[in-house]
Image (cartoon, rainbow, N blue to C red; front, side, top):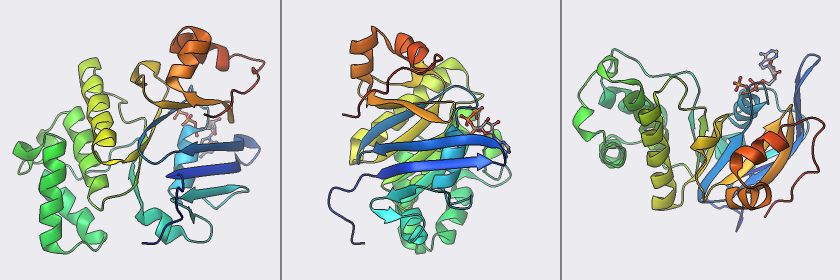
Length: 253
Ligand SMILES: Nc1ncnc2c1ncn2[C@@H]1O[C@H](COP(=O)(O)OP(=O)(O)OP(=O)(O)O)[C@@H](O)[C@H]1O
């Protein structure tokens, strides 16, 4: 697929969205560079899920633009969606199918040939430490393993951008930490760009980029290290950036 050179994995420009009178996104702009993890950090109600839902093409295109590897969601949604893998906040696996069956259904919907499907499944199940669980029904897996199955499934068609909407909701602390580590390893492995939405600052790694969203607006876009240098810690940065009235927005780097 021909893609513009040096295009961001995701570029959001001047995006606004409202549910009737309720403004969920107000002139939001930020970039997710190719490769690495960008944490979309915001308290409840900040607009994170709305942003991911728009990126997935599930809401009427609003004012502003969303491009994935240079493909505009408004004019080339199929090309944009083909480069994207998505794990929604609510689990979407069939509990009564095995791990492998869940993956095969998804691969068939994406038009992957059978032999290629089996090869890709083997690769992703291995990367996510799930090979031994392939034949088990999803119902038998714990929450962390189920999330990893969803991530493996979202990666089968080799997307360049993986969107994760609060993927650790409902997981205990060690399972959350393991999932964070797995996803960071994926982004290091093969240049995958990850947009990880969360309201938990301990899910942000030192090398991540951070976009702080609060009350429908981007309050900062910067490497985590820059926020730590400027505020002393990520917790201080988050507290300051989600305070009212808003501080002056920090520049992207
Ligand atoms: N279907 C809807 N109808 C009306 N208002 C909505 C709808 N979905 C979200 N909202 C509102 O839009 C705003 C942004 O919500 P959104 O779910 O995108 O935030 P969020 O950052 O994902 O929050 P959370 O962490 O709680 O999931 C909130 O004020 C929310 O109440």
